Amino acid sequence: MANNDYVKYMTQRIVKYMDTPKDERKKLKEARKQQEIAYSNKWFGVLPFAFRLLIQKRKD
Image (cartoon, rainbow, N blue to C red; front, side):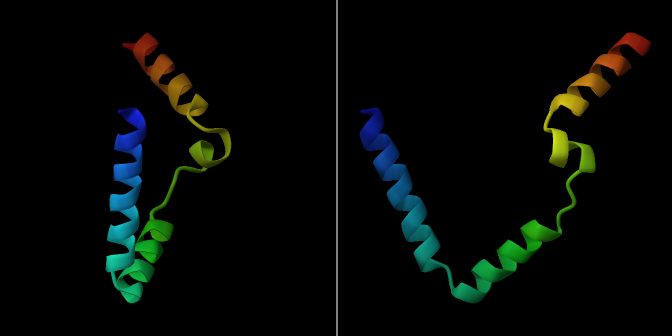
């Protein structure tokens, strides 16, 4: 069953992608690019975030 669900999901995603106009896809792509990601998360992943949470818990 899992394979069928995955194929169904991927088919729905592909059809949805193909149904959206090209200019709308470009707008969505630009919007995602302009969202700022924290520098530390971009380069080092979730590790700095986890350390920050650990430090904040210890202070409380």
